Length: 281
Picture 1 (tube, rainbow, N blue to C red):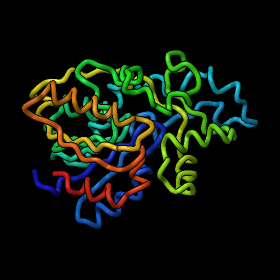
Picture 2: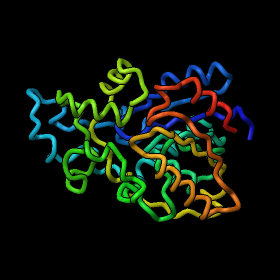
Picture 3: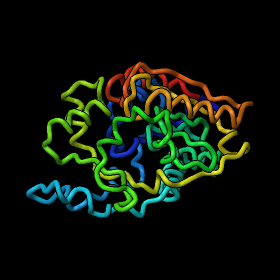
Picture 4: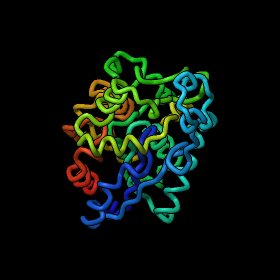
């Protein structure tokens, strides 16, 4: 596949297409077309719960309110991404880079329409095995160091979302958010990014499963970009994703590229990340 295939960049939970704004100019300057898109339930498709915008802020209201994106499923997210890929690529295959919780969405799209995905790249992303929901990995031993889970508010099974409280002025909570997502990002830039986050990640995306086949996802060229300092999806869990995929499709192993970064290299090292994804075929 020619190296000029368009790059489609997909953010993770709570973020939006804006998080790639430091990477895209560098990629385009290198001669590679690139487009960032919003995932279902995020960015322009986000819907904010009432507690997030009502004044005065009521911390007691954060946990119980059912999320306005509780009905967003993995099916919905994959359908949206597929339509975006078709529009951007004009029917030609594109290279997709998925961060964090966008991983299961990319996997579903590559399984259902492998002809549309020239290369599937996972940036410290969930890459669940066949018929395993991404949510299952949050309970595995390799996820023991996850620093995001303790920050979640409400019961995901009741509110339909993984919810973070970006409205709070609790300095300790906000510092822990910084450490989980942006530990190696300039604090001023991290603060600006935090102001753009939306509180609810649709639980349905994490609960959906995809049956992987040799002529589907197994046929697509794949790369995993590990983040060695990640505190949201730790190195041990990243290694498990890679090992499971290689065990399932040993004749088509995943290429691995390490980044000495925390969870958000698109902000902490945009030059290095841009160089890597620009080189993806």
